[in-house]
Amino acid sequence: MKYLFSLPLVVLLLMTATVSAQDNQQKLIDDYLKSNFKKMGLSQGDISEWTITDQSTSTQSGIAHIYIRQEYKGLPLFNGLATFALKEGNVFMSGNRMVSNLSDYIRYKAPNLNPVKAIHAAASKLNLDLSSQLKVVNTLSPQHFIYSSIEISKEDIPVRLGYFAVSATNIRLVWDLSIYTLDAKHWWSILIDAETGDLVRKVDWVASCNFDHDHSSHSSKCETPFPSAGNQVGISPASPGQYSVFQLPVESPNHGVVTTSIDPADTVASPYGWHDTDGIVGAEYTITRGNNVHAYEDKDDDDLPGVSPEGGAS
Image (cartoon, rainbow, N blue to C red; front, side, top):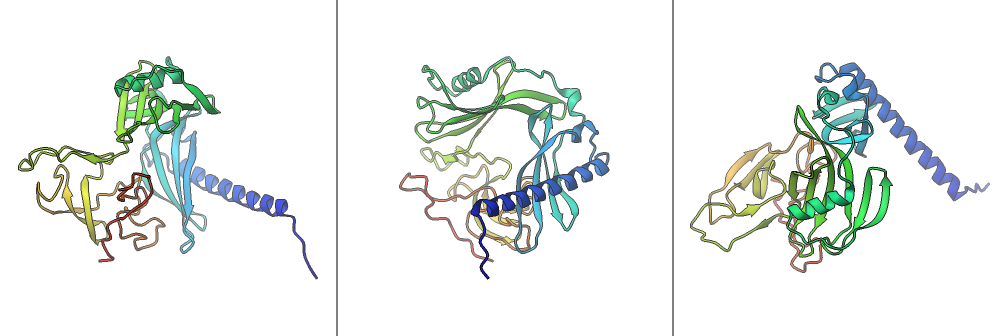
């Protein structure tokens, strides 16, 4: 006997199963937060709004890794993060940066600047000449837009309203946007204060070094978008979480000696270390690639991966 299935029906069943799994994961985390918010130093209000931002499930262990972000009245707190591991209905927290008593420190709730003014403010802070009219490419929500500006950026400019915790008690309403400069030397991630237009944070996603200076000096002129990592060059993993590096601010072998960096990975961004991407013991990569970054040469300047240094299993 032959069985015929409609492709739309199969797709619908798969989508339904996926949604059901996500709903179950959300409920498990919600139950965990409601039972443990006091231990986490949070209030009930702090756990009332959050969203899952990313998730992955290991095909070997069956462990689901869930990343959530705290919200306030529908707006994301960009650095209010927590990570969880789920298996067989059990929930384990592996990292927490949710802000305590968030509502007490919200200074303003409506932006004084619109997204266009935020982009102009960012361009001004970056000394970029923006004179043409910005065009909306997509409206993802009333607080999230995509703008096109070939005058200053190689890529469309995403702009999203949300909050950012400068400190535990200093919460700012900000426009989050990114600008990839036309010379491809900088890809700026910018936070602009939505009330004043001031620069709250600036991070360059492009790392670069200037070697056109006296190499007898040990002063560094390297810029890196990963200051928390603290390492300019990772040579090889000696053991899990242990690296032989030229530690910042040492910029090259001409400027210093190799030192050992132990467990430099951020516990929220990389709960299983830099190279373990599925939570199972053992690194998925022994090259300069991991769960957050893939570093490679691009001598053709085409943004396609070239050679990545291979450290080997040992």
